[in-house]
Image 1 (tube, helix red, strand yellow):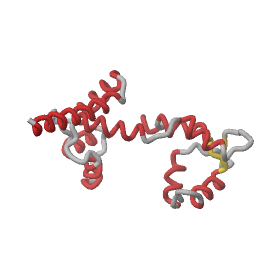
Image 2 (tube, helix red, strand yellow):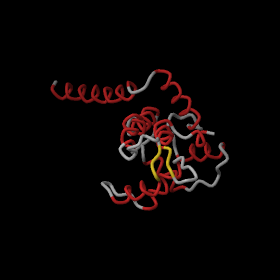
Image 3 (cartoon, one colour):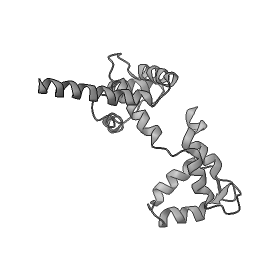
Image 4 (tube, helix red, strand yellow):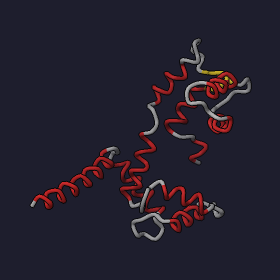
Length: 172
């Protein structure tokens, strides 16, 4: 009797964690994720595998994707990537980003005059020498997305939008 209760409790616990994933999104978002999952799951077996990713990339015109890159993607799921795992991965990615107003407030600390810009070189110096120090490569990677004007100033309001909503150039 006790072991049956423990078994039922474990099963409910597993269901609870699944329902938490679904509660993170609106129904319309879940439907969009289902459609995306269906596009990637090329063989329609309910699990995304390396061959599914290869075929998806091929349809997008990228045919020379390295196996290591595909393995890295699949390993993020820590097991077979069914729809629930797929949704969980997106939930983790989306929830890992601070709200736009929080990021804006952080940038405003470096913009005492309220211009909406921070100097790229000064900001680079701070990133490489304060708190969680960035490497030169990490700074260049971050600046690759940043809208920088000809005088070397970062439009941090636009950058905050890119960080929280994605880059339109990436989308198209």
